[in-house]
Length: 155
Image (cartoon, rainbow, N blue to C red; front, side, top):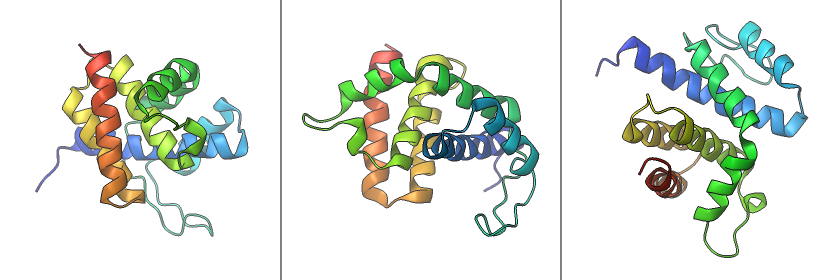
């Protein structure tokens, strides 16, 4: 199947954004420094160092990547409140895997702030990102949470 270049560039940007948000959480990296690092060393080129062993973020849509990372950073409280509302009783964001949390934050950001992205596309894309890190069970969890967020955000 031949995926259109823009769609592939956005998929790549989403994956990179989740990784950037994870790095920001783990290292408390300043936002501008983090974005600069990704622009210089990860987006649109092969990375070959001990941490990334040839990972390629080919042709990511850089403006879209920046919007997701900056948007999640700026609206984290609003995003987290929307997520907490959709978690089962007794669950907290702190209980979620740190990568899972960033997938959900990025997906929620797109659903609340990017009306130009169709709901089904946003959800499917983040389910695919989840599949890059987790098994089907976790991907279904992402689908369920983001679907619930979308019902509120886009009704």
